[in-house]
Image (cartoon, rainbow, N blue to C red; front, side, top):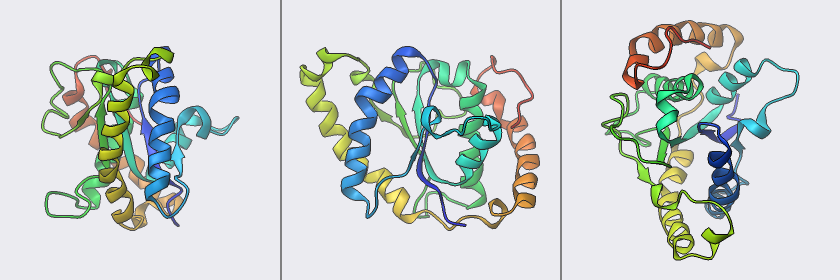
Length: 212
């Protein structure tokens, strides 16, 4: 089965966070992707991608495994207070591991992390992961578009977009375990153990155990 999405967007919900994502970041991100990809970008966002009346936990999981990569938008609550964000991040990290991605592979990762608000200190889970810093541009409203920051933000995103395009264009074929109901059920069982061994690295405030 082919991938359904190029990018799964993982972020901590919140009024200002969502306003920044929807009004500032996403329009430019989608446009710059559209300029680079041979097809219209297929982006999963929970506010528009979930089907009414369907178990949203199951649909989030399926959307993750059918996404080529993840745009992970980091802020302090992302790791400290959101079980959902941590599950999404760890699930994509699990996908990386079963595809055996690393320093000598192309792509090296399936996660494209950006920092929306500074996290100090970074949790152990991500302290050794390179990220793109957008914390200078985390303002909303019309004033942003009238400021010098707007131009710098657009220039930075245009420059950075090539790295996620590289991931999308070189992603491995869908893993066989994800293509059947039996394989997905087995993956869910394996993720319980995977979460158990890693969730503590995200911080102490996430209640354990966690699972899909």
